[in-house]
Image 1 (cartoon, one colour):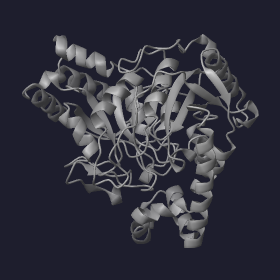
Image 2: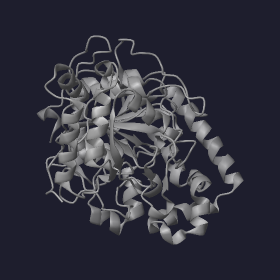
Image 3: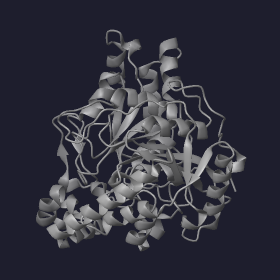
Length: 469
């Protein structure tokens, strides 16, 4: 396996790949060759669980080149990875559990939209088993590490999807995010992790973790890449009971940014992370309208996820397998699944009622603010830390993410620099359902990205040395 690196080294963007393919300096087959070489050079580092064999990948790229009107396709020859809980026809879906694996007979509609748009499928990425975890260590395969080195966890459950982008192997990857599974690994690898409003991307062909909360998400190197992929992957699917249409485009008005009181923020004793995040907040406050907003109802909702009956929802999909082959399940995942057996229907209704109360309280807060900004994670862990304290560390990682889907929010994890000791610092931008374009607009400002499909850019919030401790 290649030596640890010390931060993301994202490769060419979607726009750059399309430009090279259109201009003739590159081609889908040249891009496929570069991707295959990059993956082979790393060896088994825990990023991929399966990849298209080199000769087949080059043949698939050549097939894209030979399509009628190929160069007009919106993702012409752009390579991507898919989390191994999402079906691709003819490819095993393993969920990081070999005894559970099956060969998919149909491709998930979200992935099919990408293929129809000319994108090049590269392979399946690693994950915490059954998408249960935020740390990336709950896999029988190679445990991946963050690109920041130091034996830091990659984050999960979409560990491989974040790494494939952070290593520059693909410009975007398809992930999932039920409780933070897309945002946490993005934060730990210095890339953009976008969890859209639930229902914008079809979840048909996704093996559910918690079906009422599951969301397909994206990893990318930039907001522009997210925008380009979302224009392709988004679409109503009547086979998905949670499917819905996109919300309005950004209006161009000033974005009111909600910031919790500093005393409500938790960094779990990590002073370097606290300093880095507060430095970013100071920078943000110089260019945005700031509104103080309490984090208490958000955090109260988050505690319901694993300390309430939603953990029992995982048994809808995995209960029979747990009963038949418990020894095939990762011990920590097995214990989590079994913990769902204690909940009753009364517990479920009590939790639903409490959640509805919190939704109403949070809904009133959105009347005065457009985007809530918090840390994506309050601290980082090594692989050894997580193996020693698997539940405690995982709970800490989800402190700012667990409430997202319960409260029907969207979220974008945005890299905003590093701590004084060189670890990644990520801010999470949250908004109410269907306000995706407004939140992405602010994310682009934070990253100092022009946003072609939005109004003229407001004052820059460039990632700078001022963000760093």
